[in-house]
Amino acid sequence: MSLDLKFTYTEKKDTRSGFGDGFLEAGRKNPNVVGLCADLIGSLKMGDFQKEFPDRFFQTGIAEANMIGISAGLAIGGKIPFAGTFANFATGRVYDQIRQSVAYSDKNVKICASHAGLTLGEDGATHQILEDLGMMKMLPHMTVINPCDYNQTKAATLAIAEYEGPVYLRFGRPSWPIFTPADQKFEIGKAWKMIDGKDVTIFATGHLVWEAVVAEAMLREEGIHAEVINIHTIKPLDEAAILESVKKTGCAVSAEEHQINGGLGDSIAQVLSRHHPSPLEYVGVNDSFGESGTPTELLEKYGLNAENIVKAAKRALARK
Amino acid sequence: MKKQSIEQLQKTCTQLRRDVLRMVHAVQSGHPGAPLGCAEFFVALYFDQLRHNPDFKMDGKGEDIFFLSNGHLSAGWYSVLARSGYFPVSELKTFRKLNSRLQGHPATHEHLPGIRIASGSLGQGLSVALGAAQAKKIDQDDKLVYILMGDGELQEGQVWEAAMYAAHHKVDNLIATVDYNGQQIDGPTKKIMDLMNLKAKWEAFGWEVNEIKEGNDMKSVLEGLEKAKALTGKGKPVLNLLYTEMGYGVDFMVGTHKWHGSPPNDEQLAQALGQLEETLGDY
Ligand SMILES: Cc1ncc(C[n+]2csc(CCOP(=O)(O)OP(=O)(O)O)c2C)c(N)n1
Ligand SMILES: [Mg+2]
Image (cartoon, rainbow over all chains, first blue to last red; front, top):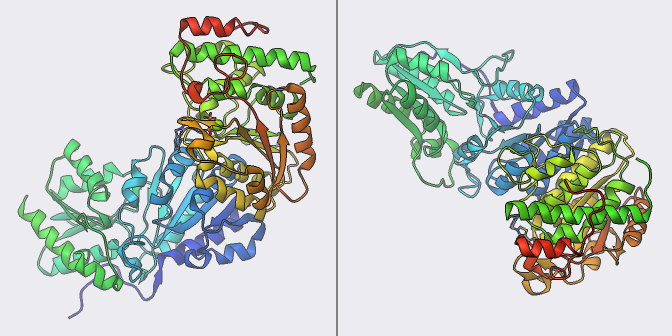
């Protein structure tokens, strides 16, 4: 039995490749774009840029704190640094450096974080950061972006090169459906309503946007019409889009590859409790670390796939 | 800026010391010890060495630029910035007060001219200076980047990440200075966490090390900084080991960590100012 999906795909790719390709294109467009990486150039897909612009690329060795500081210094000199490493080492390891030298100092630094979340897979919990969105969204001045597929990640990478200010860009490792258009315009802070619905809203970010698209089709088979909204920008959050949708549907689900504590769902709850109290159910990791496994196995075990979004939607509906 | 005589520069140092003491006294908070010890360095740098423009631009293109990594020396830095024309001297009286541009530790948020990065959390400045130096290289800007760190600050691991990087990437348009006063908050560095042979450490990391043995003597600081400048552009980053005395200029403050972060009371202030002649006019 095949589902009647509103978005489909013919190809899968990792979102980090969307970043790498967007980064190269941004470098071609703007000579001020420079890159840094802490011994993970291949993993971050920064190699093509390095090859084409060797004088604008800096290998820092395994020294993330130093990389963040150097990025701030390059930004002072008018450069637009893209500093790449795994999401864990791009946030928790260097929180104070980002806080003082980037966010508080208002530096035009792009923190590019790959291998975020459970879908990093077999490397396990040491590398599976599930707290990064929370840490980054708490920082004043910081823009936080978590795109959903190769195309959206590429578009986001190009967009942040043109935006002036500190940005945290989160992407991942697994091969993932490419279901958004190649020619999309990425508007920072503007949520994208992907599917219209009337019964419940699913707010999803990152890899879980695809799971939300699948969940919508599953719900529709049962006569439930879900609205799917792609929240690629966690901060600044598109409050107007959130309220407009929930005023119509009356209840919502948040879906993210992140701790429930401090994640997208928390931000949405804040908006709803202030302006339009409504039932909200959370799909996210519930106060635990991850473990080794394949991405699909992990999403299932930790309750982050389409089936779990369907269950959450039904719980939300029951509370209306 | 026209070059000043050693006597004039010394007078400015005395005034800087008065400014620092009066500033921390006024709010009964802040750090007098290290800026008293770095007065000669600050004044030699801003009034003699830097090719800079007090008409401040963040990117510092075509200018020498300075970063203060040990942000708790803010009172001294603010004084030298004001005295060299970055902002009105009268603004020094707002130090550490509500709505001031002169935050407890340096910040860019309030747009105080002369400041390009926040500091206060130790260990980050050398990395920032490296980035700024590399931006200059990309732009083929032949001016220099200066940075001051504390000796206790060198206990932070990030400093050594930056030290390794600087030599590997041949960042030779950078002059870093260590305020080698042998003191930190809890006591002498030798007792807290011995830095051992600093010269050998920096040399082992691939740096050119320039010792300035009389860090509180204007003539020797000027000569030392000239020498450092001559060492740039030769493929190696340059480090000044600046031997200073914490609290220099006030007999009861000199040479002890006790004045790292304690302001003088009224009586102590009067006694200290009695040892430092007002030369350029108090703020
Ligand atoms: C990361 C960090 N840890 C601790 C402190 C608190 N602190 C402020 S100054 C200082 C001592 C620094 O020693 P040194 O660099 O030698 O400066 P000095 O005491 O000579 O002024 C400490 C521990 C800080 N500001 N930043
Ligand atoms: Mg010291």
